[in-house]
Image 1 (tube, rainbow, N blue to C red):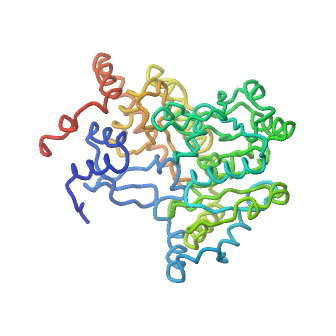
Image 2: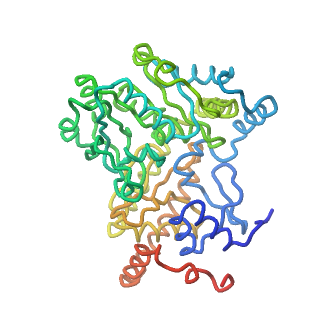
Image 3: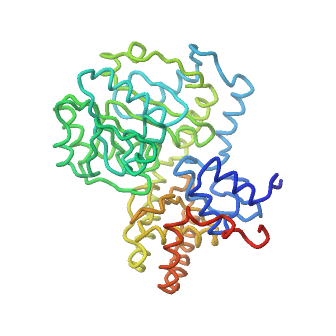
Length: 446
């Protein structure tokens, strides 16, 4: 199978319709285009194979084209792909029951949607309706809850508000992990606290022990709703089924997506506690009128992905192999302190916090040369971005050791670069949007 369009045209389309940041990096690094994927590997249009430690920031949690999930999807497609609005397919009922048993706590209503951002928005509408005399929402600085328009109003990465005018006076931002600041922010007039139990995105950070338990107690004391965004952390990514289990707490609402279906369909849900569902039934607050929410193919893939994780004990594998990966990365951080600041994370949700966006770009390019994909933050303004390592949970220890070897070689290559060359490239990275594409094209493409 070959590309149906020239490489440069594909990059032009990528820039126009998907991500200008990613396209500039592809051009700067002379990056090839992914064409096929299987298991822990992706293969580009030249036939080169890469170990995928990006996984679209954790989506492909059971590997690409997982046979068990693929079979469940194909079986369901042969039967029924979609049901008319207002009807509930049996698989949706099965998934609701499975999730309610799997997630710690007592759960009532579950609302299915197509994306995590949509689930965040739906929960925002709900909390503002049930807490009618409270309009305030508290979120954490640098948090990420999606980029649809309403979700962006609680986006902790506040630089994006300037572009879209989504800043809201009712939203208060507090530093992640700073419980004292949160105590000052939560009080009369606040209806909800949104928090990632482990801060994801380019600012990956594990909170202090007891942080989520303290937030739960604070919300209970002030009659404030606690919404846990487990879009990135759920389904074993963090070494437990869900990150809230580290502090043994139950939120009022939990948001799930990304790894939920193993990457086969865009799918998400908002789960509401039994207490909330009894007091404020979802159908009374917001009747479900979604054309594609809870469609049978999504439910089939989610059930198959959860079964695969459970059957192959991948949550425990994430904990053990995550320790292997983090220990190896920490050893490299000690060896290259001029490049790596630290190694945040837990389970197979980890990465290298680098000393500037220039090092993130260089590491991405050097790892790509050596057949490893890592999760780039696409944030050239970040002072200490985290290059993320979110491999499939079924990656083997042997593959992780190979990744560590390639990471070591990449750091060695960067360390050999003259300081002036790194400084010059830093200017390129920070101003890459202003560089004409024609200067980044290869001679063959000009």
